[in-house]
Structure formats: structure tokens, C-alpha cells
Image 1 (cartoon, rainbow, N blue to C red):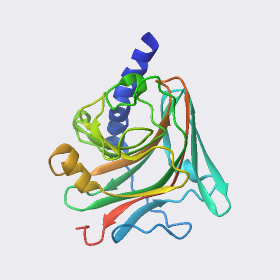
Image 2 (cartoon, helix red, strand yellow; image 1 turned 60 degrees about the vertical axis):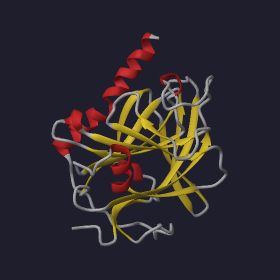
Image 3 (tube, rainbow, N blue to C red; image 1 turned 45 degrees about the vertical axis):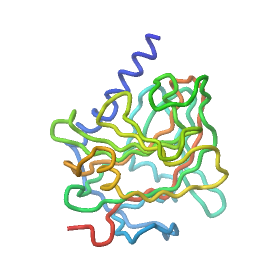
Amino acid sequence: MRSRSRTSRIYTLFLFVILLFLFITIVYRHVPAKKPDTAAPKYKTEIVKPFLFSEENSLKEWEEKIFKGKVVYRIEKDKDLSYVRATSDKSASALYYKIKLDAKTAKPIAGWKWKVGKFPVKKTAESLENKDVDDFAARVYVIFPATFFTNSRVLEYIWAESLPVGSTGTSLYSKNIKLIVLESGAKDEWMSEDRDIRADYLKMFGREPEYNIGAVAFMTNAENTGTSADAMYDDIKVGYAEGGKP
């Protein structure tokens, strides 16, 4: 119990430590696409930064935040498809990338493809309100750092095992982290997401964004249940809806 409590405290500080670091060191990076983007977005976009994971060293531009043990993130290839595979064995660590996007006056978007190979095993019903089962095979974050980092905001998108798609909630670790379940259950296929970040922020926080986007992140974790989880991520991209950039 003491170990779990310590892990919870570390996780509570998780995003805010990153956010403070982001505020001090945020950088601008613009890298051209390494391969064509074949995903069809729900709306026309201007992509500022694509992450296509087509090279063995594709993860070098991402930074890692370790909470308990290290999740294994590696590039895998299957025929013409390349992606990040994340394998957690009683561990929790996230990869994050610092990028600045206007969210106060523009219309930022985010998109990605993901697939779950294995869900963490939970002894009780899956919930967004129980720390004992606060493990998910796949999570994607959009982070809004504030000058005073405890005022920062985060949108967290989740692939759950049994929670209904569309379920929402507030993180057990901070009222400023809002949760949205985008996918649920086992699916033997890649699922594509295209999110209107401004609309999601307004829905979850009840107001327009006060801060700009400072980072995106993703994580697979299974430390609370003491089990294992496996997921794949690909084609992560951030930018603006067409006509949505000042």
C-alpha cells in the first residue's frame, strides 16, 4: 500500500512537472513528412508536425517521463506499416514531445492511429474513479502549460476495455486533467482518431482554452494492477483546421 501511495503521488506530479519544464524550455520543431499521410481526416487540415515512426530512430525526438519502471517503446514494422509498440510489465512511463500550437485564437487539431494488443487485467470493474484500476492499454494527451504550472490543463484520450465510448471524467490526480474514452474493447484493426481540440476543451472545461498547447504525449501503463499491457501507436499529427490559423 505504501508503494502504491508513493506511485500515486509521483503520478499526481507527473504532468505538472512536465508542464513546468515545458514552460521553461519549449522549442519549435518542424520536420517534413517522411512518407505520405494516407489517413483521411474528417476535415481539411494544415499539419504542423507529423510523427510517422518510419525510421528506427523515430523515437529519439521524444522524451520519456518515468513514473514506475519503464514501458518498452520500440519501432516495429509489418509489411508496409511501421509504428510504435508499447509494452508495459507492471510499469508506467510516457513519451512526450514539446510543440507550440495556438489554442487561444486558432483551431488546433490532433489525429492518430492506435491499436490495443493486450489490456491490463483488472480484478474489479473498470472505472475512471478507482486508482486500483487506473491502468489503460493506450492513452494520448494534449497538454496546455500555464505560467503558474498548477493552473495548466490537460486533455487525456483513453482506449478502455469495457467503459462505453464517450465516457468522460476528471483525473483522480488533478481536477485539471479531463478524460475522454474514445475507444473501448478489443478490435482487431487500427482505429483512426481526428479530434477538434478546441471543441473538446470547451466540452470538458466549460470554456475556451486559456493557454496554448505545449506538448503531446502517449502512454501505456499497468503498474496499478501489477499486470501487463500492450498497444501500438502510429501517424500522430498535430496542426490546425483549415482556415483555423490566425
